[in-house]
Length: 270
Image (tube, rainbow, N blue to C red):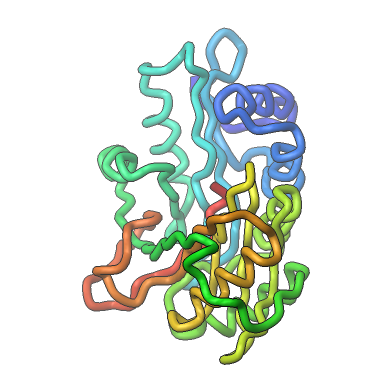
């Protein structure tokens, strides 16, 4: 039976999350504190127990509509190949409205979601990795920020580009995930201006889930982030201006039209 989540499901949903994704309690706590709302998701129940789940999370606005993202679709390994994932994805697609989005965890899942829903590829990303030894000596300052300031700078830098306008809950969630990882949500005061980044540091790897800076400042920003957080390698995600430098990142109900600016999703809580 597929049904809406209820408040009393929370302990079992947490157990299923941990079993499928392997995350620790602290990471799971942040999600349930910031983004989870009873009724905003569905479970596949069998024998009175949730065997699969999928959340619908309000993260802000996209193209003038409430942006609800299908998130953390998961199935107990013992109950896979029964169609739960496809049915949950279809239910959440129907519930999500015109601003519904989904960020597939891997490239092969774009096909999965396009077959089971009407989602179309809509968001793109340019992703680059740098080794410390290949970066210049950094110029500028890096300053931790709270989510309110980050949101203001982010909207200024993304003006004119189709993008998800994150609400404060989504921004707070990303900031807390950054902090939990040993990274941070930061302002970059670089020679050419003020920019922003959200850096996570898991297992010694530095990943910048969103870097908003001009192309000419990417290497300098990467060097500054490595200097602050340590490590020998950093991977950064930035908006794309040229299709040849971009890869598909997420899906929406409208889809991207060739010739239009490439829409930007931002951090996907992945």
